[in-house]
Image (cartoon, rainbow, N blue to C red; front, side, top):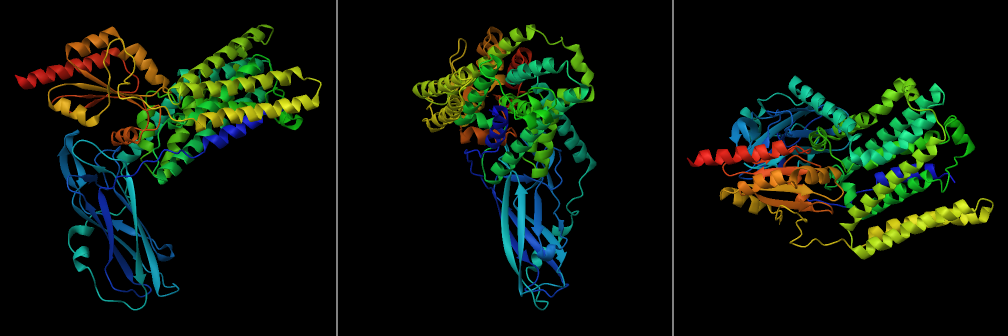
Length: 601
């Protein structure tokens, strides 16, 4: 029963399954195209004006934005015959806004960008098609929307050189800016810094509780490999690295595809799907049963030979790399949120580069092991004590299953959770029956079929279950705070009226959120500071799909949670890092209160 190979394939297939959450893109600018002549002869220079009309009260960043993390307004034009296109942008304006202390480079109102190219000599037909694509991010004085790409096409008449048209668009200052693609060294430096953040964030994920089940598996595997050859250790480490990187590339492809379809993309949003949570529960329980010795994974002989002398083989190490990524996604780490949030608003190649950087960070311990395999000899020699270790690792995995059922309980009704648990218990029953049928081939085949069918039933029950409706008063049980449901308009109004408002965007599947809540927010020290300064608390639950929350996060340049923000009278809102500390939270409230008092004096 090549269970490990099946698990690896299933993990990868489900990893790239499309996310169902859809989010409409809100457009605040319109694009029109115009040509400088009525027709063109082969060899003529063609000039195309792209007119961007921006709604009142909104602006977009210039093509060369003031800061590296801002989304540049970018025009792309596909010309006939793949002719080389030069694009020039108008001069931007430097304007101050409430969210920045310094003026930034923006476009407002009506903006004309001009593309030019030489019409190829060898073109068939008397018409050609021009396609233009404009990427921009609209902002007002308080917040920014998701980046939007708008497209337009225009027919170009080919024949004789025609009369001049739309002269006003092509004369004057509209073409006075530099050509597209002249990036600055500052942008390159900013990109390098973000990629470094991605590597550091991925490395820190290894210390987060989400990855604990995988670390328990790898610890047991490393102990078994301690007596193996150098080549076996290196091959196993590299297979784990490959599993991590392949899964991150699959996540990147999913993000690019979902964004192109207008879906909400973010770190860990797949945990909003009950079917995915149930799928992980099946995997975790199977690994637990394997650790407890209820069944052994026997790979086909040829695969085992490829894997060296290790019983798990390369497929097992590769699967553990996939599993590491799946279990890491509900956790957020320092450096990770700004890096991933930055990448998800960039072109596809940069999304892949950033996800590769995070994957390299997560896989870094195994990369170091491949470079210096002698480190595995620092572990104790294999022996009888490993039976006890194996049992303990199984219980750690079972604890992860308990957490997954807690997540599922926040997504679907309690009765459906019970059905899912019964289906999963049936999976365990068939695994036990397989272990009891050591001599009967037919009985083992029936048991394997039962495991497969019960696994699919577990996932199907969670997928088809009605989504749990959260009531208006469900702000979360608290011994210190009266949490109100999050309402952005109400938070802004309260701040305008002189009250501070602390907003917590959380989810049951976000372990970092739960750690912050238990260790920082829901503590006497923070509660005393909030009470003393009359801070209103609001909570938004992102356990299930919620387009309003997704759009709100996108406007703040975030694609993951936890997300904490403090609305303050007469001051810009303060955004906290993903990992909170009591000192920073209380200190920010104290400083904000003093600023309010000073403004009233």
